[in-house]
Amino acid sequence: MKPKILLIEDNEQNRYMETFLLEKHGYEVVPAEDGPTGIELAAKIQPCLILLDIQLPQMDGYAVARELRLNTSLNGIPIVAVTSYAMMGDREKSLAAGCDGYLEKPINPDTFVADIERHLNLPKKGNSPHESNTDS
Ligand code: MN
Image 1 (cartoon, rainbow, N blue to C red):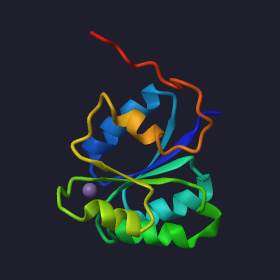
Image 2 (cartoon, rainbow, N blue to C red; image 1 turned 135 degrees about the horizontal axis):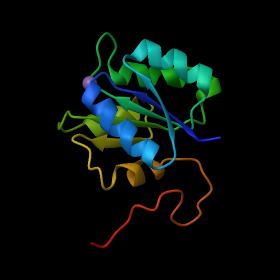
Image 3 (tube, protein in one colour; image 1 turned 30 degrees about the horizontal axis):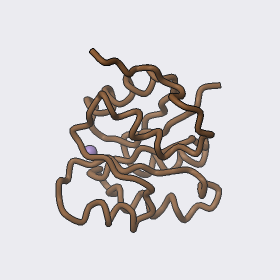
Image 4 (cartoon, protein in one colour; image 1 turned 60 degrees about the vertical axis):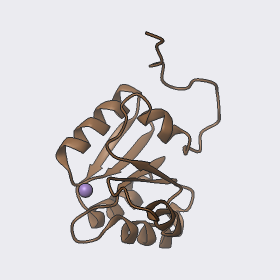
């Protein structure tokens, strides 16, 4: 069974790009276009990781992270914030809201999956599970 990643992101292009990269590396991506949907799906699918856009309609990513952290059944699931807010303090705000990591947009397709995998609670086994590194 492929490891599932919940992707909470309202922008279609970002969803497409992140899904493409993650699927290419062997993950199943479950998309959510807004926070409430993401929160509902998180409990249902118990993903191995949650990727969380901060700039979302209705409920911003900080509020979503706080809500997710109230659910003890989701305690072990890392949350990585992905945000285009290039502002001082965002990283701290994300971490304070319960996120485990922080990535800035635009994402770098060459390092995106590796950056996310640093937060996965998987046993370390070298270059798992992707082999995208090239020296050319
Ligand atoms: Mn957004």
